[in-house]
Image (cartoon, rainbow, N blue to C red):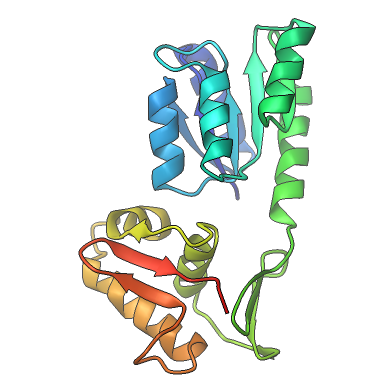
Length: 224
C-alpha cells in the first residue's frame, strides 16, 4: 500500500481517481488547492503526489518548485490540461517525475503511477550511525545484525528517517504512524521512541541519533 496525495480542484475528477487508487489498495488523500497540498506534504509522509497545475491560489508549478526547494524528493506526477511543449519542459525541469495531459486514458495513468511507486519503494537503504533500514525488505540491522522491530516501531523509524534530519512534531507522528486512532495516547509515541532508543542507540540514556526536541517532537540525527 502506498500513500498518495491527489492535488486537484475538480472534485469529480479527484474523487474518481481516489476511488480507482483505493481499489488498487492505496491510501489516498485529496487537496483542492496549492497551499493545502504543501501543508499535507509537510505534515505527513506520502509516497506519491498527483499534481494539477491550474490550482486556485498557488499554481502547481509553484507547489512543485517549493517542494523541491524544501528538499522533498517525493515522486510527483503532473496531471494537467496544459499540454504545450513549453509547459511539459517547465514541469519536468522544475522537478516533476512524469507529465500526463488531460484527457487521459485511466489504465495508462494507473500504469504510470504504479511505475513511479515501484521506483520510489525500492530505494537505497537509509542509514544513520551503524543502523541500516532497507525499504525493499523492511529489514533493520545494527552493526550488521538484524534488529527485531515491531510494525509500529518500524513505521516510526521510517517516518523519522524520511524527514532527513527535519524535526517531526508529535502531532505529525501520531497522525502518520497511528492515524490519530482514538485509543492512541501521546504517551504511546514516547514509549515507542524509548524502545527504538533501547534497540538502536549505543547508550539509550544519552541518545546521539533519536533526539527529543523540547515542546515540539522528535528528530533523527543522521550524522555519525
